Image (cartoon, rainbow, N blue to C red; front, side, top):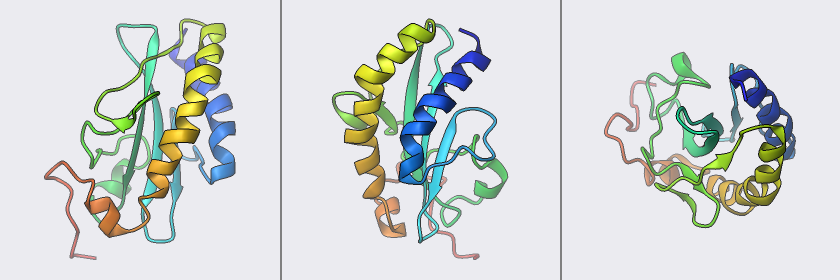
Length: 154
C-alpha cells in the first residue's frame, strides 16, 4: 500500500470514527486528528505506517501551547509528545509504551484490522484516556520529557 492510499483509508475510516467526538484533521498533511478542549489542551490521534513492515501504529497524546513553545510552529503533524514513548495505542492495554501493530498490506487487511482492533481500541481506550486530560494539571501529570513544562511567558 502506498503512503497516499494509507492516508486516504485512515482519513476515511478513522476520521469518520473520531468526527462525532470533535476531532478534525484540518491542517494535517497526513493522518493527524486533533481536537481542542476549553482549556487550551489539544488531544491527538495519529496513525503512522511503519517503515519496515506492512503495519501501522497509533499514537494518542495530549499537548498544549501552554507547555510547548514550538506548538504553533509544528501543529498538527510535527509536534513533540509530552508523554514521550507512553503514547502508543495497545489494543488490549490501552495507551502505553507498548504499541500494537495494525495491518495495512492492502485495503482488505486494513479494514479487517480497523474493525477488529483499531475501532474498539480507540473507543474503549484512546478516547477515555484523552477525556481524562482536560486541564493543564492533568496534562502535566503525564509529561515524561524535560522539554515540556508550564510556560510563564504567555
